[in-house]
Image 1 (cartoon, rainbow over the protein chains, first blue to last red):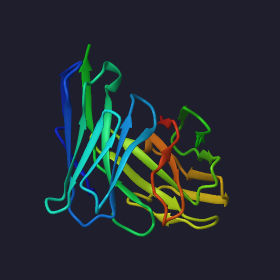
Image 2 (image 1 turned 90 degrees about the vertical axis):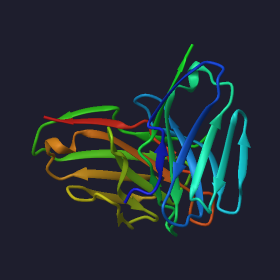
Image 3 (image 1 turned 90 degrees about the horizontal axis):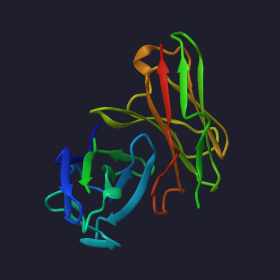
Image 4 (image 1 turned 45 degrees about the horizontal axis):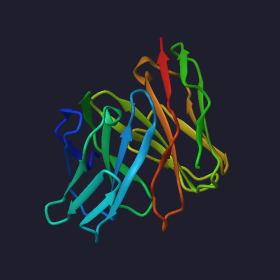
Length: 111
Length: 114
């Protein structure tokens, strides 16, 4: 069953702008993760935020988690053309380390 | 660095053929996963394994089987390939439960069934 739902489905911005992507989910989670996928490649892990955390930073990435609203956001600051990719949120709600992925957001950063 | 490798980047098979997709990880991970990725549907879990010789069905196991004879290797088998199994197949691995369960992905195998 699909747990995470990203929003918007596609985003196009100018290089240097910030990109904000959202993810909503339905059930309680242990953690939420964001992944990036360049065209035709495998996914790369970006950041993990646990259910007892509210905000986390990694370089130009900032992730927030609001468990009361069952939502998360991924902010990429000062975007670059190389940030062009698909971004997925994934939730972990069980004991088997199984993740449930959303359908992804396609981000295009225009040079 | 963790490395997950998949046996082929591109594969073309005919309907009815038996297809093997191999995945190997080099970090002694307990958990391994097979997903398929289709436009508009995202990643869907086919099977996963959290130990040698153990396997668990994911969300869409029909038409697939798996084999995990060694810890580092997880194989996906299409017993009789069909055109609706044309897809991108992604393998992933992660540490044992109780650790961060960040998943490490292979580069993917794009399978076309004619």
